[in-house]
Length: 196
Image (cartoon, rainbow, N blue to C red; front, side, top):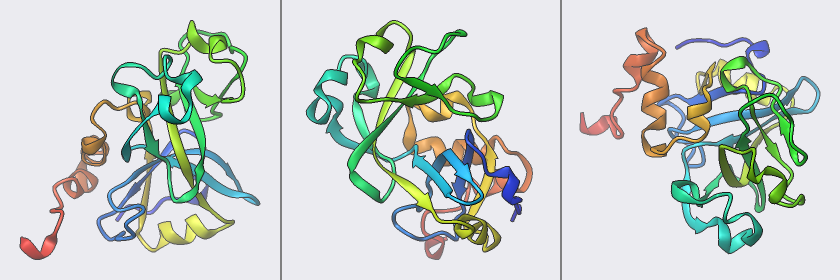
């Protein structure tokens, strides 16, 4: 397995569950890191767990912005499932009110957190993509570093397209495959190795 160093964990990076991680909350998940600090730990959202709940059902004011194929809520993780957070892709150079860019790597530039208490109209003309997550994934200080050392997670570069993937069921395989080499081989790992 590829071992990642603690400083590889930062907003905009992806945590990709290895086949060895069998926790049902994270099995074959791809998590976008949205916040990380050496003292506070790490917060992220699972990008490939769509639910059947429509955004309009839980956040009616945001339903129009979430329209099209992105109108379902995603389960962002097992923590605080009764709360929501949203991400939006805002092309260009401005920073509209109610939106804060992730301080990450350039590949996910212009993706940021949305203040769901602000009026949706503030983002209506700026946001190219928008996604709502119920709950989040969180790790305490050094917890994620320990899980990475145990080969539960890989830390890789993210892309804006990963955050708003139209095919979330294929995201795990797609992210691994584009890494090349040994990591691309993991993308072929069977769902149930005992049936192989």
